[in-house]
Image (cartoon, rainbow, N blue to C red; front, side):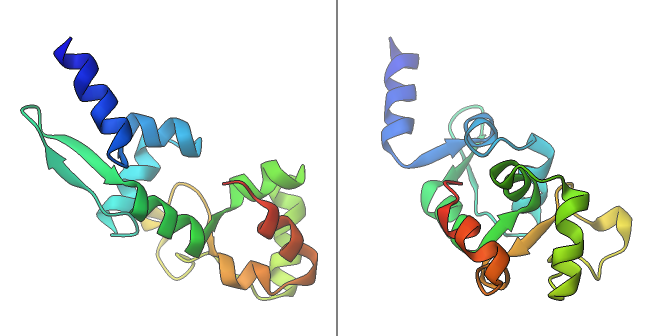
Length: 130
């Protein structure tokens, strides 16, 4: 029963494990690791196994500030290659566009602010349930 109480307490505590966040955001563990390493998400280790936990507040702050291109694509029903010309026309760049390719995120990420200020994407981004 101890494992059950730990699981219930973790869910009530406003913390995500890596696998919970992976399922919740529909992204890979590797992307979550990148976001943590580059401090876009906060995390800490706790417990005997030193499991990594991500506070829900950190996840909420990430979602308020950034948009994953794959989420925008899924929400809009458009493929990334169909969205790209719109971004280019409005000079919207991924947050890692200046980094060498091998250092970029596994997923294209943009500032939410940039997308909200574009007429064609503002309603869509505003309605995203992330």
